[in-house]
Image 1 (cartoon, rainbow, N blue to C red):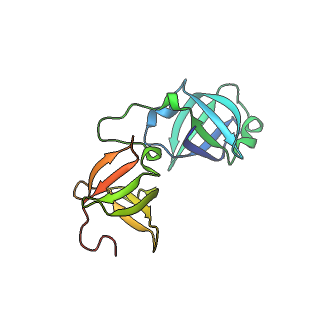
Image 2: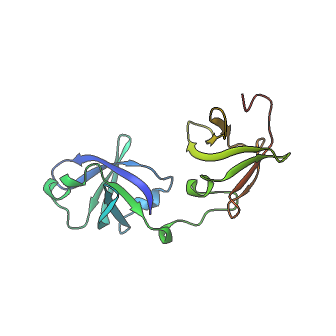
Length: 167
């Protein structure tokens, strides 16, 4: 299952929850969409969205049959997830984070750099965190000048090593 949001609190008394979004796809929160509530790594229940609006930096969701704060109070801290078959098909050259994480990174000359363990999204482009066998983790920007080839089937990424990138 894949995270699309985290319920951080309730909102009002009519069953809305405040959700911190973890997806780039706004349509995940469309009315009629099904999400799965997971707490403590255990699936709790299926939820169907019947209301969605934005408030400040959060998404406010309302679920079918959840019309009171008492119905959703225990959802706090839970994660909203989707199943793999609900994933949106991506355009060529686009990847889900789970496809990139655990890929082994090499230079164009064949030197192994390490394994991608995390992806950060600080601004203009993503930054991949690469765990090296020896030494500190290294941060590699996901830009065309650096990342030359991605093969998710073989879990392999090839980069053009720029001066100072591994320092």
